[in-house]
Amino acid sequence: MIRSHVLICAGTGCTSSGSRDVKAKLVEELEKNGLTDEIKIVSTGCFGLCANGPVMIVYPEGTFYSCVKADDVPEIVSEHLLKGRIVERLVYNDSVGKAEAANEEPVPLSETRFYKKQKRVALRNCGVIDPENIEEYIATDGYAALGKVLTEMTPEQVIDVVLASGLRGRGGAGFPTGRKWSLARTLVQDGGQKYVCCNADEGDPGAFMDRSVLEGDPHAVIEAMAIAGYAIGATQGYVYVRAEYPIAVHRLQIAIDQAREYGLLGKDIFGSGFDFDLEIRLGAGAFVCGEETALMTSIEGKRGEPHPRPPFPAAKGLFERPTVLNNVETYANIPQIILKGADWFASMGTENSKGTKVFALGGKIKNTGLVEIPMGTTLREIIEEIGGGIPNGKKFKAAQTGGPSGGCIPASLIDTPIDYDNLIAIGSMMGSGGLIVMDEDNCMVDIAKFFLQFTVDESCGKCTPCRVGTKRLYEMLEKITSGKAELEDLDKLEELCYYIKNNALCGLGQTAPNPVLSTLRYFRDEYVAHIVDKKCPAGVCKDLLSFTIDADKCKGCTKCKRNCPVGAISGEVKTPHVIDQSKCIKCGVCMSNCSFGAIEKK
Image (cartoon, rainbow, N blue to C red):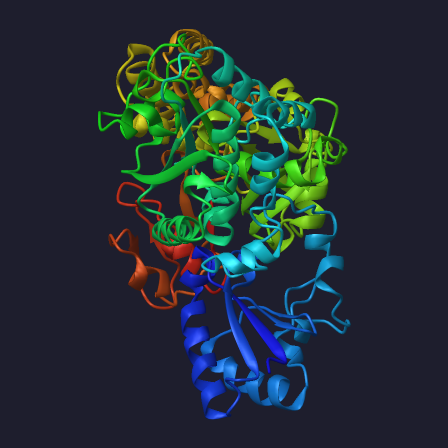
């Protein structure tokens, strides 16, 4: 008889931290102690607290262990699983991450600052069930929504529920999902083939929401795509997922095979006469294939390039047939909307942005990880409460949302409620949900250059405004960060940004200038400092930096000289050293090795 369940995160984050070794050691220890019939190990998806991985929860107590290593497992088994004594030093603590560092009683996980303001809909099963076991999904009302629509609802009624819920696409532009489905159902009614596609390409730097859903709850996406197929009259679906997501691809294929075996994909599902099946298509990592027309072109086996619209995919998409395309997170909401009703979903969020949104928190934040919050939650709540604030006592400077297509939100707007309209109004966008936090040590000109370099590298090259325009933008930013620009270059920079926005072929090119425009809008003084003062206020841009040694503080220990990779430092033992600026590559090794604070960065 099973008396305890041990849940171990097997998502990509915890796997990279060693959760497989933890599980292997746990299996070994359970066998050694004769507990294999009493303790069940469950490999789950992402719990959300990626910075604290590998993570483990022991039920029925609900004890949450963080930063577990394989060497910790024997103690957990001997103390907790055998003697019933919790290993306090490994228990997740709300304020500092580990209980040993604070004299506080651990609180229930749902009451911690990280989870308290979250509302899990798309992530409801992540970290709860074994994603490779269809019966665990079914036990949490899995496929009940599909059964309901096939036995109790017409396609029109399904679309009406999705429309009434206010669900908007979670992949970027926020187009109403029900409206997209309605168009695909009604625009072409010739009885021919229609398609349902899932965008799991997720190419934004710092974004890992869709990957985590596919790793932790793949059946939710399969069920939702079948519902979409029924609603629009499609019998075939494709999930386009990047090959760099091996765990997600593996679990999704297992889930598809299981759904077919259980009669939940294939012919005559639930005896309703409805046929629907799914296939996976692997992407090669091209960022542009996140754009819907490029994605469909890639599924067709052609070079992934966007096409002008109209015609829109709802009328002429994959293989020139009516197609619905939504991203993973959008689909993950559908089964719950069908089961709990449109009013339930619409009760969360704001007037024009209903429901919840999943964000991948990254950058200068204590609780790096995955969060799902109701629309309208402020940026301050996400960063300071859920995210735990900025590490090392640094000040919050900006947050980047929407990846290369988004913009930077300054500290002055930290109380902005996060929804589609508010983000657009302040020069950013929701995007797929990447949220990168920056502190006072980040240079905003350098941040704009980083995202623009990504866009330059990933441009498909089909249209001149994107292919050439973004390259020229990047060159102008390089000119600024190297101290060679003039003030009039800022006007040229801004003019080119708007030209690209107005003339690029697809949404990726049209939004590429957003990081530049938003940093110009809110951090223009940093651009001016680079140009006029030839200084980088954050001390990041190497061409504008210099390292000098204070002769009064230097003890002549020679440590900086011995570690300099280019031999730019000279001086004898017990005499002040000097840096040859013509040789210095500004790597900062000297400063990090100095024990006396004698080296300054200016």
